[in-house]
Length: 120
Image 1: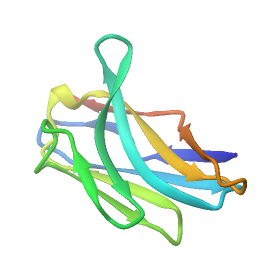
Image 2: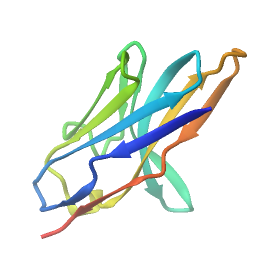
Image 3: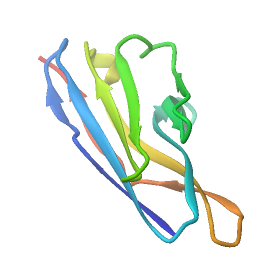
Image 4: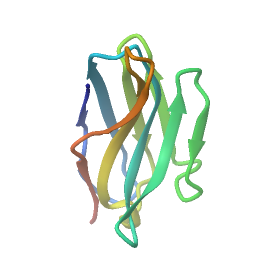
């Protein structure tokens, strides 16, 4: 089982910055990908950014150039640096991780979410 603990959300003015953190803990062989999602129409969650254990990154078009995802593999922690925030970035941001368990099966886990509000 993997537990994901997020932190760093809050209220910021348009143009401001926030840094989210997501720390993975528990029993697993490895953490493969770590990423951030936010709600989308249709009760779905849209990808914001994701990083692999090798450092590859993928971003949603709407955040590219403004958000940066990074990762500390030794600490199993991912970070999302959010700059030039816009009101439309307001959402609950959920951390997601794919882990390889000790039985070699892969499983996906979600954090509890952290609120980001962008408003003047």
